[in-house]
Amino acid sequence: MAGRKRRKLRLLSETFKDDKRVVLINENNEEEAWSVLPVELLELIISRLTLRDNIRTSAVCKRWLSVALSVRKVNKPPWLMYFPKLGHLFEFYDPSQRKTYSVELPELHGCRICYNKDGWLLLYKPRTQRVLFFNPFTREMIKLPRFEMTYQIVAFSTSPKSPNCILFTVKHVSPTVVAISTCHPGATEWTTVNYHNRLPFVSSIWNKLVFCNGLFYCLSLTGWLGVYDPQEHTWSIRIVPPPRCPDNFFVKNWWKGKFMAEHKEPTFLE
Image (cartoon, rainbow, N blue to C red):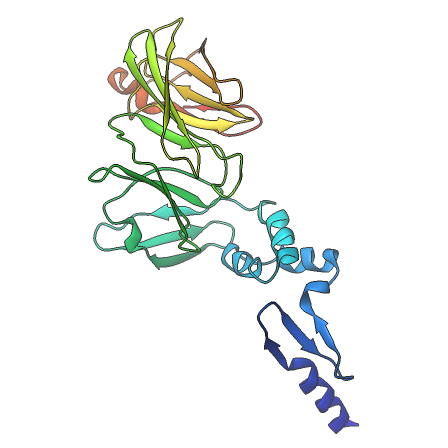
């Protein structure tokens, strides 16, 4: 009986890889694909994995990818990325697991990180004016048309793998005119359109920019909120009451104390 049990366990543990999938050999010498596991069981297992293991699991097959993505965003706080003073060794801190991971990322040499979303970094190389997406987990890189970015900020709507991905940047031409440039993965050039403002809007690298509920929200140095609709191609300025700053906060640094965070609606924080 003991020998039969050991033989059964040995057969169940024998796995091999072909060009398409990982298969399991049962005691009847029948192939059973891991991908046919019930969805409920997959969700239970994958939801307990760390982000790194979740990403690795999503590479097994399309079905596992769908399940991994469905549980990846549930109760998963974002990782913190620490920049090295020297070299290319970046650190990622997972607050849910209280673990720090170190990764060599020489691809970031000479780049400025402009924005991040859905695990992707938006990079800009000032020397070559190259704009590109980079995934630090898969090392995948997606190049975009060259674009000169001086003091303006830039953001994107969703993962560059999505057909709905849009890049947005705004730069003031005059107190009442801004130049809005947009692009998308696969495009050959950026599209720039000038918009007239109802209120003065001054943009710089100190602006705060988020994408939420299909709109780009940009907080100017003057305290106005610029809103761009990529579907309707409209730009409007809204008056937003400034947040109350601490009494010991210097007046000259008022613009450094305002931030926006993505929620159901854009939220202003002191």
